[in-house]
Length: 87
Image (tube, rainbow, N blue to C red; front, side, top):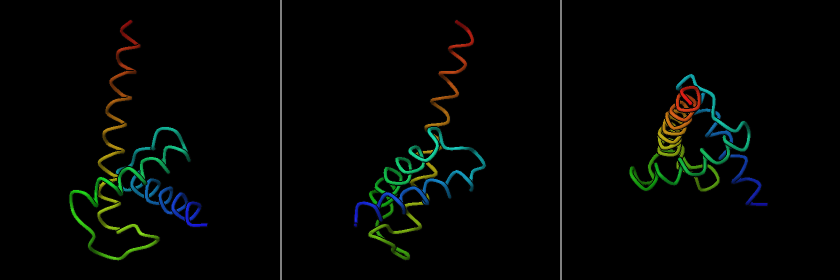
């Protein structure tokens, strides 16, 4: 049951990060889950575990890390789209 809870919370964190920056997360629901989980790992690694916790995720560092991941993914995909248009 904990893996389902982790995927659910990771998806919500990724979705919320996309809402905050006003850009869609590439990949839909799966992209939300991946960006939420990777972003929470990155945010916790850089900022530590402070703030409220849900299902093992420190919410504030997780959201900040997910925002970074979403911005990086959008920049990479935007660059590849421009490359494909030039070819």
